[in-house]
Length: 363
Ligand SMILES: Nc1nc2c(ncn2[C@@H]2O[C@H](COP(=O)(O)OP(=O)(O)OP(=O)(O)O)[C@@H](O)[C@H]2O)c(=O)[nH]1
Ligand SMILES: [Mg+2]
Image (cartoon, rainbow, N blue to C red; front, side):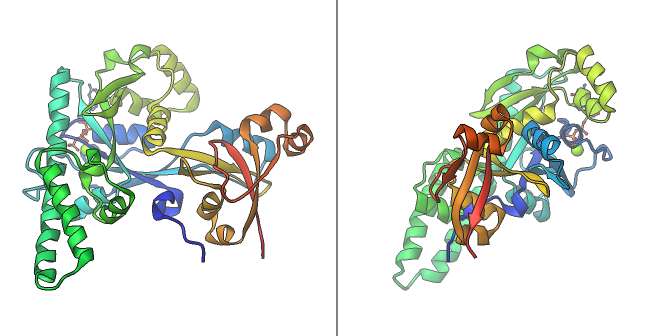
């Protein structure tokens, strides 16, 4: 039976799960609404507000225009609005276990920082630092708990597996104890696998949304805001973007021109998320369905097949591949065949972003 390393697959039917987190009143809910286009009551913040959003992808739209399929499916992101995080919150259990659990199961965080009422850059860094400290403390509590249990369990007997785990836990604890995020600890593949189950908060991928005042919106602020604490940051004006997200398409275009907004935050943030998480998309096309499949960079054709269906990976014979660029250049599959750019690839072919694939599988 063909088995796939778990980290190459995205859970929940290919949806990434991203939580919007940040200090109190930093604009989390406003940004959540801007990204999802869904209005939820302001101040709603028990972490239960989860919405599934489509990943904008003009390649999928273009394929749908050409094939006119019964169904068009974009990659999806599950986005959650959460409670505020401040100093002492996790330790004092102000954040309840259920919310903490949801944060732990996130693939990544969007950290919203308030820069709309005159905070200095230094304050943003301090605010982020405070949140990271909370995460590090929460991770330490988990590590210490596990160490205690191992001590009780394996105290008398020789057990290499437990000893190895203990050594790893001590290393993690030492690193976190120095106030450093676990993400910055280099781990070998085995250790990486061993810690995955803990779902440590300070090990998550993070993107920072620096929430700017309305007057600052516009072109000059649309780029990246550099990094904060080693994590990539984007400038955003959440209130403006929230208004944008709620508008009819025609109004939106005019509004974006007026405020000199080139691209809405949804596209910018999702691209950053794909980048940060190391994701690419391959496409499947046809009269039934045109669809984008997000996979980790570096998956091979067989692993990509598994993200569609495990059976397809087990019975994998070949992948028919045409790049999106070639498809558009030559104007179709048959044209690509004639031009000699249509390929038959084997299991170990490394899937590229925008590959249009069809998996040939045996019975
Ligand atoms: N001027 C300005 N105000 C903003 C911006 N984003 C949020 N606000 C205001 O800040 C207040 C808090 O916004 P929310 O989105 O509810 O913040 P939150 O982080 O979800 O707050 P809690 O869930 O209570 O921690 C609201 O009054 C917003 O209108 C912004 O970009 N510019
Ligand atoms: Mg809120």
